[in-house]
Image (cartoon, rainbow, N blue to C red):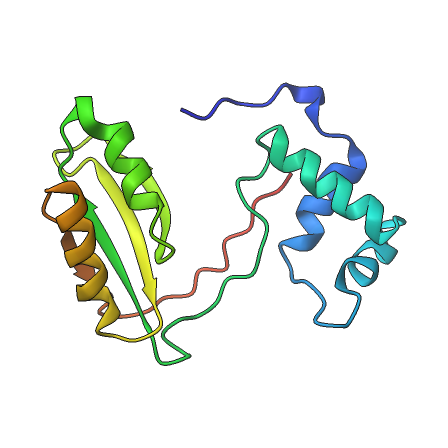
Length: 156
């Protein structure tokens, strides 16, 4: 369960980093230095602050988001009905698959929801079969029917 950070956990620079990097990251030979410059930081300072933000739980990850479908792969929203006493074990097992992202617990019969991203469309079914084999639980697949871009941003 995630907890809310204390109000003083982030300073103005942390907030500027979080707000700025949601808009993009430079694709240049020294991307951290380029991203840090408008923030008045060095590349090393930016990396240190990103590391700290991850450690205190202000971020859960920092990295690229690849559009698997645009590269010939596929995405699929998946869900499982996991017995509560087995939830942590199953979550660890599912999360160990590199194809898995965005794994969340929900208050519903299907209490584990996650996204699969695979390099080939047939990789979705293959990965679900492997997860089912390792967990002994059915993986329900909810493939994307239509894509919407909502441009979600969080103000830090």
